[in-house]
Figure 1: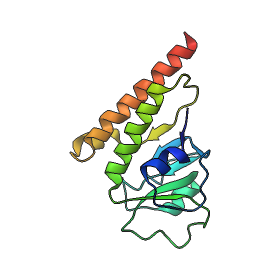
Figure 2 (figure 1 turned 45 degrees about the horizontal axis):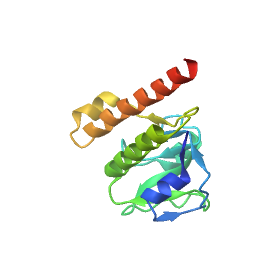
Figure 3 (figure 1 turned 180 degrees about the vertical axis):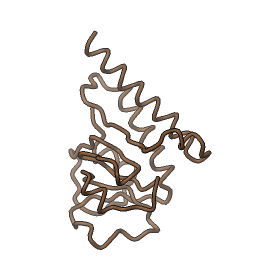
Figure 4 (figure 1 turned 90 degrees about the vertical axis):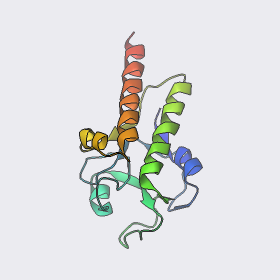
Length: 149
């Protein structure tokens, strides 16, 4: 069960670009340099190179509402706005953990990609994200084991 546009629109109602509640996100990436097929990009680990993220497969972004979206961003490209990217990521992860726990089937799951989870543990503001990333990985492993079992 993938994270969808509709899931994010509930968390972040301030958006631009297309509004497609069925759009699925296969990845969530905090760095533009990571290959992120059908991904949602959150510029947490860097200042935000949206062009590189799009080149690496991002189909949407979570953006700080105080920062201007680059002029080269396609008009149809979905952008969700928040006043705190780190809290936004935590909200996405909490919502997705709940979605997975309530799902009858978890055939396909969204992958959360970070360059260096160890560095997340060292930063107090992102420590919870590292813990939640491990919970998501565990939930995905459990879902895979249930399918095999």
